[in-house]
Image (tube, rainbow, N blue to C red; front, top):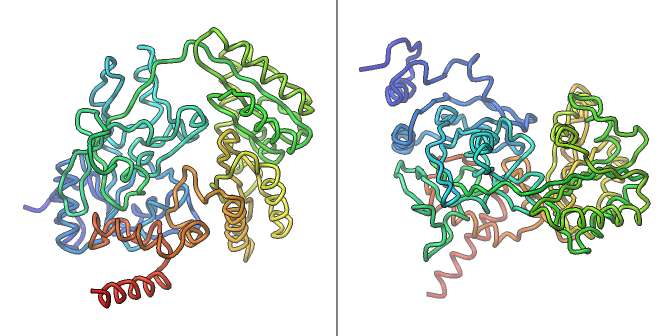
Length: 487
C-alpha cells in the first residue's frame, strides 16, 4: 500500500516513501529540495532527486538496497556543515539524511566509551557527560551543530587535535550499511585492534564513498585536572609563527595552539563575540595547556618566556573560565565571521611542517596580491593545519573563478613544502584535481581500486575524492594490458 499524501507519479519516490512509511519522511518537490543542493561549500549546487529521513539502521539498509537494485545514485548527509562539497548531490542522488538518527545510545564510564547514532551532535556528547567528569575530545569549530557521523566521514579535527588527535583517534567501533544494503560491524565491543586490515581507519575519513555509518562507538576522556589559556599579540606574523615552533621545540605539547592574522582578527572582532583584540596587530596566538595541576604553571611560564623572546607586544593568561570562554568563542566563530567583512569566502584546508609557517604565510600573502583578493588566515598552528580563507564577491563576474584559483594556489604551496591538501575538511569535489599535487596516477588508481571493492557500482556518493577520469583511466588500461601480457 502506498503512503498517502504523496503528490508525485515517480514510482521510485513512492517506493522510497513506503520504506520510511511516512509522507513526512521524504522530500521531493523542488522548493523543499533547494535546501539540500549544497553543503558548506556553496560554490557548486545541484538538486537531489529526493531526501529521505530514516529512523533506524534497518530503514537505512532497506533504502540503500532499493537504490542498489534499481541503479539509483545515493549519498548520506548529516548536518550539511562539510566544507568540501562531500554532500553535494552531483548526480541527482537520493539523499539519505541521518538527522533523525540522533540518540545517545549508551555511556560506559568504566571503559570510557559511548555509543551514538550518526545524527548525534558533536558538542551534545560532551554536554551529556560533563557532569560525570568526562568529555569527547574532537572539537571542530562547527561542533555546536555538526554531527558525529559527519565527523567520521570527514575525519574531522579541531583546535585540540594537536594533543588529542583527530576523529579517527577516538573511534572504537562502527556499524555500517554497505553500498548493497548489507549491515556490518567493525570493532565489535569497542575493541578496534582485532587482527586483520584496519577497516576502522579505512572507513573513517572515506567521505561517505565506502558505506553509510549508522552507529558509532567513541572514546571518551576524563576531564583534565587543570587547564590554562594564554593570549599573545605579535606585531609581525613571522614572530608569531616562530613562537609556535619554539613552544613545541621547548618540549611543550599544548592542548591547542591557534593563530589568526590581521584580516581574521578584523572578522572575529566584527562578528558575534568580540574580545577587544588590537586593530593594528598582525597576529594573535591562542594557546591552551591542560593536564594534572602540578606542572601547569611551569609550562605557562615557559610559554610566556618564549613569546617574550619573539617580540610579543602583549601576552596574558585567562583569569577565569569566563574569560577563557570568551577567547574561545571569538576563535570558534572565525569562519562564519568572515561574512561580517566579505560577501563571500572560500575556506581552504592544507597542512604543512610547522617549520615552514613563515615561508608559506608569506607565499599566501603573495598569492593574495597576485589575484587581487584578500586572504585571511585562521589555523591550527601547532600541527601546521592551515585555513586560508579567500574573500571575494560572487556578484562580480570572474571573482568566483579567481577565488577558486587562489585557493588551489595555496594548496600547491602546501604540497611544495612537503605538506598536503587537507587536514580535516576532506577532498569532496573542491580538491579532486588537487589530489594530483600529492599523489601519482598509480597511487590514485590504487585508491579507486579500493573504492571499487566496497562500492563496485559506484552509486554511493560518486564523483567525490578523486580526479576526473582521464590519464588515470589510460594508465589503468596499460597496467591491465601489461599484466595480461605477462601471464
